[in-house]
Length: 163
Image 1 (tube, rainbow, N blue to C red):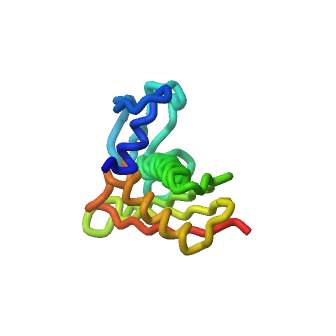
Image 2: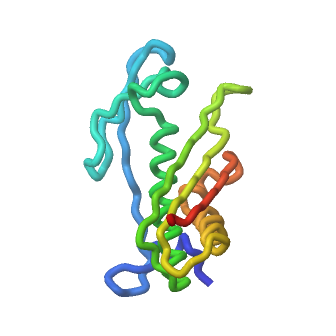
């Protein structure tokens, strides 16, 4: 039996083919941790360039981005894809999934990411709230980004159907 994470990689041009990819990001940091600044200079796709990052953005303000914000974005998009796939495989194609990810960075006992809260609001015709919650929890276990964080970060998943 193929996991949902693997199944996400299996469909390519209508054939069951294992596909994979290596993604690249480049960053520069100048100065000390507290007073310095950096940027994500580029990503392989070209979708991001010269995106500023500072220590202060991690702990105080939102003027720039932070690694945690980018991890939240990655987890939200990956989770949405995993849930969409699971719902479709069960015969309940979602019309719309809105995912909010909140990644908590803590300085208690050393800097670390402690929690990822995922909340999904979905429009899924013919599905009840309990089944949607169960599908969301299963998708959280099969999402490759969630799997990468597993064992290090507490994951909380909540789901609601749009009315």
